[in-house]
Image (cartoon, rainbow, N blue to C red; front, side, top):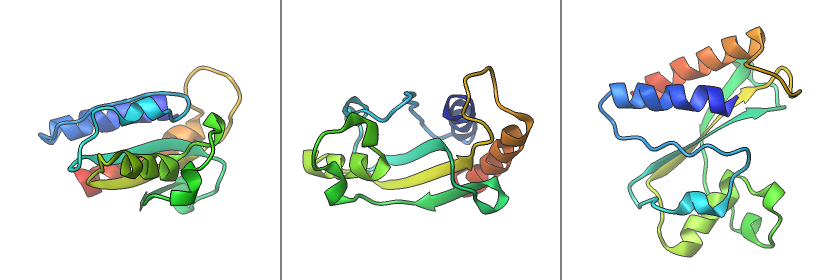
Length: 131
C-alpha cells in the first residue's frame, strides 16, 4: 500500500512547490536516517491492521526512547526511528504517520477496491494538511 500511495503524496507535495524525498522499503531501516535534517518533516505511510474511522488515520507522532533499545529489525517503527534521529543528534522538524486500514495482506498485484477508496480518502486529508 505504501509503495502505491507514497509516490502520489510526493507528487502532490511537488505540485504544491515543496521539495520531497521518497524512501521506499518493506521495513524501516536505519539507513533511512541518512540525509535527514533538523527542519525536515517526516511522513511515515503504511498499511495497518487497525480499523480507523474513514479507513485511515493521519496523526502527529514523536519518539519513544524505550523503543530503540535492543536490535530487532522486524520491530523497528516510526517511534524507534525518531528516537534514533535523536540519538544521532540530527533531529527532524516534525513527524506524522499516515496509516490506512488494509483490506488484504496477501501477495498480489495492486490494491483492492476497498483499500483504493481508503487510500484516496487518506490522500485528500494529506493534501488538505500539507499542500
